[in-house]
Length: 71
Length: 448
Image 1 (tube, rainbow over the protein chains, first blue to last red):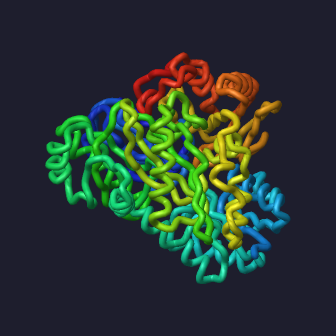
Image 2: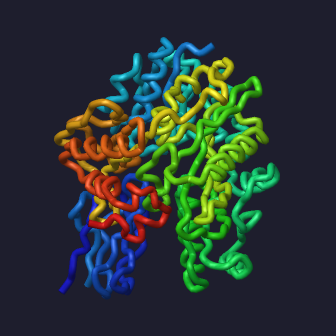
C-alpha cells in the first residue's frame, strides 16, 4: 500500500533529502522543513521505497500537506 | 548627535527601541517585509519603509535595502536590535561608511568577539578562565576525537562564526562524534555562512550566568550585575532572572570583575554581555560575548532601574555614561519568561498561525514586551517569540508570585505557546529554590 508522508508542521522546504527510488528506513528524513529558524525533518514512518516527492526546495507547505509518497 | 533612528528589526524589540527613542525625542523609522505590513512595530514609528519579501535574507538581512531605507527616510542612526544583522561587523562597518551612527559597539569589536575562537584566545589572554578545548576551529571529526580523548567526554561542538546556541552539538561518546560533527558543520554553514566548528569541554549540571556590561567612548566601562539564564531548550533561553539565586558572593563578584576586565581589554563601547558557565563548585568559565542588546535586557532594567536602550542611544551619540559603578545596584528581583509560538508538548516545535485572541496581564511589577496583537500572523519566516513577560518585586518570592499570576492571566488563542510549560517551571520546587542548571529541560525536569 502506498503511504503518503504528511508535513506535521507549517514551514518552508529547506532541503529534499531523498529522491524517487531511494530506499529509506523508518525515521529517515525525507524532507527537512524550516520554520521559525528551526530545521525540522519530516521522517519516513516506515521502511520502503520513495515513490514520489511532491515538494520543491523553497516551497511553503502547510501542516497536513502531503510532501512525499512511500511505495 | 542623533536625530532619527531606523530600527533594522521587527517585533517586540523594534517596539522597545522606538519607545526609548520617544523618551529622548528622537524620530523613528520602521522597516518591514511583505509579511509584516500589518505588524504593530510598523505603526509605532513615525515612518515605515517596505524593504522586500518575507524571507529575511531578502528583507531584514539585506544590507543594501536597509541602507537605502535609511537614506530615503533621512535617518542618521541605525539600531540593529538582536538577531538579524546585530552581530554582523560588515553591517556595522557599512553603516559607518554610509555616514550613519551604528547603535552598538565598533565593527572591530563585533568582528573580534564574533569569531568565537578568537574571543576565547583574547579573553584567556586577558586572564579570564576559559574551558579546555580547541584553540582553533577543528578540521574534522578525527581531530575532535583526539582533543576529546585529551580533555575527556562529554564535549560540545560550537560554530566558530556565531553564537546564540545555534548549531551546538553535545557529544557524549566517540560513536556520536561523526554524526554530531556533520550536523554542527552543516548548521554553522547554514546559519553563519561558515561551517567551521570548535570544541569545548561540556560541563554537566552547570549554570549559565551572564554579566551585562556597558562602556562609553570616553573610557568608562561598568557592569550591571548578573542574569541567571539556565532554563534553556536547544541551548536557547526561556527564563531569565536577576539577581541569580543562591550564587556565592565570591562567584558573583568574580563574574562581574572578570566581565569588566574582559570587556575593557578590547575597549568595548555600548551594551554587551559576557556569558559564563558556572560549575557546581562555583568555578566559572568564559563562554562568549554578545556584542549587542540581549533579549533578556529588561531583567537587568527592572532589577537596577536603569534604561539600557536609552543609554545605548546616548552613548552612541558620543555622550558619557550617565551611571557610576557604585550607583548600579540590584534594587529588586526581576524575572523574564519568553512566550514563544511553540508547542512544548511536541518538543517545542514551532506553531505558526494567526493569533485569534490575546489578553495580557498588567499590574504592579508586571511589564510586557509584545511584538504581536490579536489578529497578528505568526510567520514561519522569523523567530517565534510572541512576547516577553517580566515580573519584578522587592524579593525573589514576590517577583515569582507576580510572575505566576501573570502567566495565569495570559490568554493566547490560535497558536500554541510555551505558557503552560513556563507555568510549570515557575511553580516547580527546583526553580523556586533556585536549584537550576542548563540541562533541566532536556532531562524532563518540568514535564507535565
